[in-house]
Every structure is written in structure tokens, then in C-alpha cells.
Length: 104
Length: 253
Image (cartoon, rainbow over all chains, first blue to last red; front, side, top):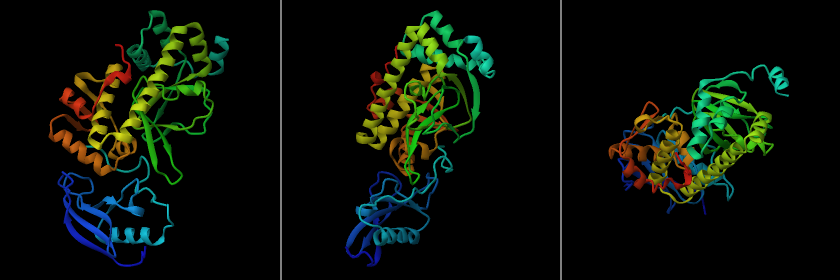
């Protein structure tokens, strides 16, 4: 698939059954490659964008969170453009034990 | 022999009161005689303290002693080369997370403290002597190991087939019964120092999903979870939510 082609985002409401509804469909050319949602109040990273679902190379075991859509686009473009087939695993977005996400 | 061991390792003389949790733990899954309970209490042990995140036993280690959690909370985990972590078990006081090291020489995973944790180390030699003298305790440890395996099976079902709500509710149900087993869940309330990351790494979920489910469970009044303290408010409903059946814990008391 021609991966260098442009990444575009389309607003969408995502039925997550939670307040995290504000979403973006992420297209590479005319292919849907991911769905992002903006984390609502109640999350440690409220306001950040979460990879609600990724397809193909973006279907990763530890879905990352991005501080803004630009960062998300960069990640999508990077994974689609540079990784060899079959490597669908990003480095974890957080090191073990040291992250600050305490349960309430 | 006994004297030699005592002199050789002068630190193996401590008798921390929390060692009673081991008696409680084993008593929760089998019957123990008064002599067996006393023999457990008399085991020589040395106590060490760990900070959160510190390894108690590490993958690749060849232990010559087993650790007993006295106070605190521990997890067993394994890391992939790029740092991704799977937590495979949580351990309450009274548990011996590396009991297997008695018969399996090399640790194939690590045990870490998840909060400031006190662990007691019991020489393999002492456990062998103990189980030689008290075959009932040999069976108790064997039973404990089998139940450990049953818990792993249940976690495997969770990661493979339960949805996020079921997985988290199931884990909370399990932890309540295990804390009850060592008399550490007064009024269905227990301390669990797990972060969202810890829960996510234990259950194969993302932080976000863990948080969403916990918000739902709190909103529905099934649990409260504040300051690392969980209270079960609706036990029956929580079990239904988690498709929980306690048979696999094989608790008898």
C-alpha cells in the first residue's frame, strides 16, 4: 500500500459507551487506518488523544496516547511509512513501574 | 545440623509476627494440625524490605531460599525485550511467590514489590527439613502450587476471552477472597497498590480501558477505590459482572 500518501483526519463521534466520544477517523489516502478519541474528564490524560483502534500495522498491543493530533499523525505516518511488514509493536509508551498513573 | 545452620546464617533468627500470615494462607486452603502450624511459625527466616518497583527475585536467579510476603504486595512478571511487561500474578501477605524455586532451579520470571514490602526468606534446606518432618505440610505446599496453577488458568481465560468489564470485576473478586483468606479484608475492604498501568499489564488492557471500567464500577456503586483501598459494596453483583465462580481458589476455610 502506498504509505507515503497523506494522512487525513475526519471528525466523528465514537460509540465507546463512555464520555470519550469526540473522535477522528484517520485515513491514509482513502484507507481507514485508525480511530482516535479524545479522552474526557476522569482520565489522567484528559484532553489527550487515544488510539481507540488501529488497523493493520497500527493494531498494536499497547495503544498509545498522544498529547495532540499532530503527534498522533506523526506516529501514524511513522508506523505506516517505515516499519517492515509484521512488526506491529511500538516501544511501550511507558516504562514499567515508574509511570504515575495511580488508581484513584 | 540445625545448630550449624543457625550459626552459619546469623540473620536467620528473626521471628516477625507477620509470619502468621503463612499459617493463615495455608489454613485457608487446607487443614493444619497444631504441630504443623507451630512448625511453620518456627521456620528460620531473614527479613528484607523492598521499595515499590524493586525486584525481590529476578528472572535468571538461582535462589537457595523461598520468599514469603510478610507485609505489602508483590507481583510476578516478565518483560519482553523492548520493555513490554506482562504481570502474571498478584501476591498478598502469606503467599510464597517463588515456592517453585524449591524444585525448579532457575527463576523463569521475576517477583517485584508493588508497594513498600517486607519479605521473609526461608532457606530451601529448612523447607525440605520441615516437609520431611511434616508430610502434611508437603501436601499443603503442593496444594498451594496446584491452586497457583488454577489461578493462572483463570487469568488466561480472562486475558483470552473475558471482556474488559468481566476481567476487572473478576480480578477484584479474586483479590477479595484471597485477602479474606489471610484475614486482611475487614468489611470487604483491602489495600491494593496497583496503578492503572499495573492493572493494564496484568489484564492485557490499556490504561484507558482500565480507567473506563473502574469509572463504571464506581458509578454503578459496586466498589469504591480510593488511596489504594478497594471496598466491595455489592458483592453479588460484582461476581455476576465478572462471571466469577470461586471454585478455582479451592478455599476450605
